[in-house]
Length: 286
Image (cartoon, rainbow, N blue to C red):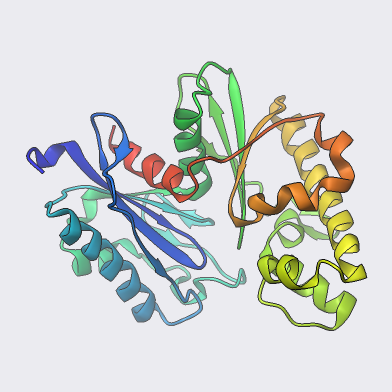
């Protein structure tokens, strides 16, 4: 890689994974065969988490043979993105980092100055990347949703960068929306219905679709998601959505019984996957 200033390291950190890649500023595309992925045990101690993050980032830089100077990191919330302080607690991920400045130890481990590490909400980064990839920038507004270990929401307005809508903790059914739309809801609800313990939605779909409880699960989840779509759509006066995250891949199965209601919205499924958040994170340095 010749001109090092053309390249930025983009990182996507989730509740169970970290992915990193070098992004070319000239065309905002990931350098081919450059994505490095690792599983993150986000309920481990802080030291273990930082080492996993740093090893992944360092491996990516070494594989590319480049000395990058800037890193953009997409991170789930709640998180103080300006100061690099994690505010996640009670969400089955990163509890040990609560109220910790993660920028300082990470900068030390990867050898890059703190001021050259910028954080962005993962849903906002995802939406920014998808709008670019799907050529949606002729629209006036796009709403983004990520469904996985957490609930992400973002808004993109024409001519502006996307921002975190921060709707995960909106009150819903005596709790908050996130508790009814993410992986832990499937695990908890399936156990209540069947007394069977599972690790996530993928296992339920692969092993238990014939169980009578599966149709109940789909019916209930459809109602929750439609309620969220309705709330989000009315809040921003928009029916155009991009939905991503691990759960998004299963939406055709989960929403099958509610096809007519779903068609009230213009929903596009994410096409870049993790690459959207990586590109969106790197684009902080555009």
